[in-house]
Length: 144
Image (cartoon, rainbow, N blue to C red; front, side, top):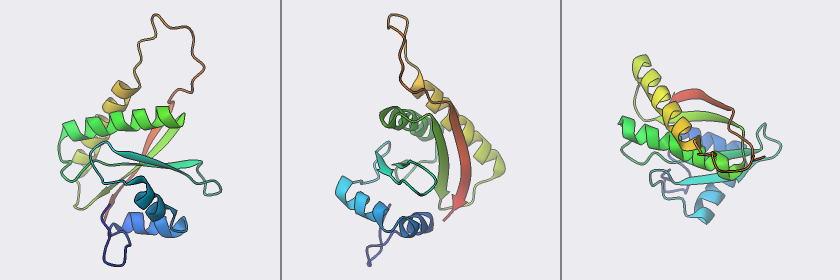
């Protein structure tokens, strides 16, 4: 989530999202001290924009292996638990082209990490009324 000299995001996907949300992404980025470390997350409330919240979870600078994507899925699960969300949509921004086979492998690895991250042993717990993550949709792999 690097910025250029004019304090705007270099990533075109983030730049467009920040513009559509009236600069709230860059404002929160500065206030939350979001550095882009792997697994670091930030959730913004965005009423009136088609979603209640938008979350940002960093893969880090070198996220080209299955371990990083599984950890990303686990971070998604943790962020959705904290936000008490039941539906999640994921958009992945990449700096290079990704083959369809790689996209399928990445999606599968993220899904596995998300399932692992949502697991709770409730054997000795009373019934919980907490929201449960029901849907995770990988909406897009965009090249920036």
